[in-house]
Image (cartoon, rainbow, N blue to C red; front, top):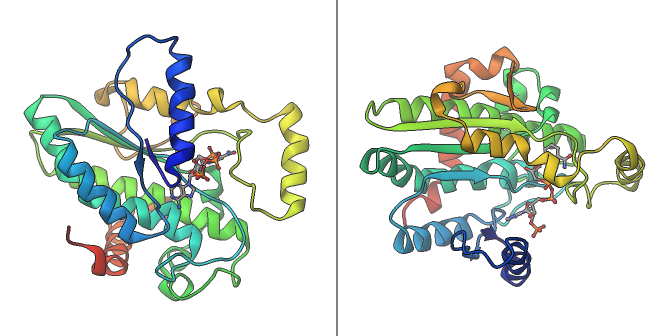
Length: 269
Ligand SMILES: NC(=O)c1ccc[n+]([C@@H]2O[C@H](COP(=O)([O-])OP(=O)(O)OC[C@H]3O[C@@H](n4cnc5c(N)ncnc54)[C@H](OP(=O)(O)O)[C@@H]3O)[C@@H](O)[C@H]2O)c1
């Protein structure tokens, strides 16, 4: 479990172990990772690569939706936490995932939790306008656009990653993005009061429980890669279409390059 607050993580861990009724089903380890700070991502990766010799499934679930703000490195907060932190993490861990697949003949996976909000982003300029992302707190963007933008980056990055892993014919690594549904969690806790008010009313009747909202991630983690669409976007356990601009290899490469440039001071371990 990679968490930004280790104390809270240990409490969650205890609850999870209790839920397993004392049965030994594996080992759960809590490690610190703050995706808002690229130095923390680098430190986590350094530690992970020191402690572990394989990585079968990486689920990039953490995310936020809130008002204007910047990360430790002065990057618009949604883009920084929801995309860039995960980008740098995967960049450090991708070789281990590839090696795990080859060495143990295993199906490995990278699963990126995106959102239907990504459909709000339409044009190539919307996606790759670095001026709106760097040294900007997002106050020039509507909150749901900034969130949707970062979630569209998850979809596009997933497609680039699938292409990256395909270069090694010996490795079997599937990459998927998904929408979990509209789930009654804490994701909008920092959002404007009106958004929270509407969501808490809806949660009484329409929102999924967290257990139900986890089903597509679990499905993607357990299903055979051969039965899934590599690089695809999923909702309710089935593949869905995304805006055609996400399928452009040029757009995928430009997002990768932009992300590399923004992480360049943290690129080596
Ligand atoms: N809920 C929905 O309706 C919905 C819909 C579509 C997509 N999603 C996506 O589903 C994913 C999970 O969200 P959720 O609904 O379960 O919301 P949540 O309850 O707020 O969980 C988000 C998690 O992300 C972690 N996180 C936030 N910022 C972080 C950072 N800087 N470093 C490390 N971890 C950080 C949070 O940690 P803390 O506990 O420390 O805050 C929390 O554990 C997100 O990617 C979200 O965008 C949710």
